[in-house]
Image 1 (spheres, rainbow, N blue to C red):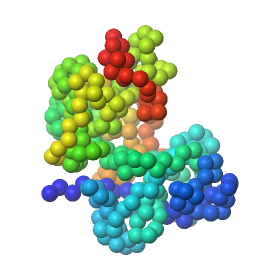
Image 2 (spheres, helix red, strand yellow; image 1 turned 180 degrees about the horizontal axis):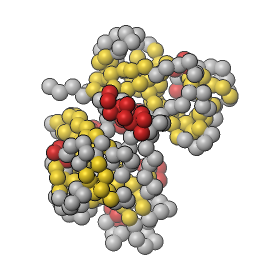
Image 3 (spheres, rainbow, N blue to C red; image 1 turned 90 degrees about the vertical axis):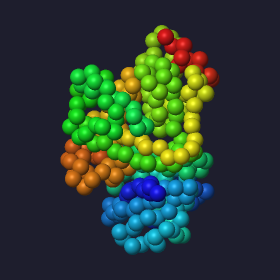
Image 4 (cartoon, one colour; image 1 turned 180 degrees about the vertical axis):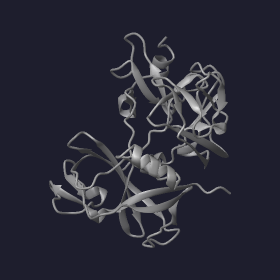
Length: 323
């Protein structure tokens, strides 16, 4: 049976200390002791150390090169922390409890000796949020539009193949990733029937895969004409369903920059490279990405991201009637 694993970097909660606020001088505590507005800073002497997690019905330690944690130790997500640096950079950290110790797993790059103000403490659906560290996007068989107009199944792509992008023409594939998951809960694929969004064939997508929408007229979601919307928000409209059962192969594409590509003719985002993503890559490609992206982070596409908090009303009426 295939083992779904995630290679990540974590830091000890003791190394993430409040430099200003109610808990000044204290390390990152339990969710109940954290206070909004407190400013945290990662100790410059702290190092993120590698950890491999097994993702199944539960989360456990698969490998720990530092030998600080026992293999098969249960990993309990306590909460998701949303923080903001002075320059506006947003940082999300999943707080984990492992073998009686607390750790922080950054879902985006974290900078040492940088102050991060706590702006949200979310203890709901943390296990679901942790599922975002697995970057599955497109189901096997999804055809991607190439630079010459051909439609190629995503699993047949190779590094260097030229893919058509919406904003930058032909771009070379830098990485093609694959993960096999149980098709349940947060990993159950969303099925868009043929023609549902103008797609040439039925689409099977990870729930958090974002589609690109260009909205005409005044009836819009958000404040811009261009938005990125997770497909899970469309379930129940236009024949779109979420299907549970068995195993599913998900594929991800990474380019030099965050791109909008075409899957079965529908514009969708490529993998947004972050620290959480690049730790899954081969060492040679990690080195290349370190050089290419000093902060291990793509600049996100300019389209407005629609979060669940920004969505209201019947989405189907808005999306499917926009033309």
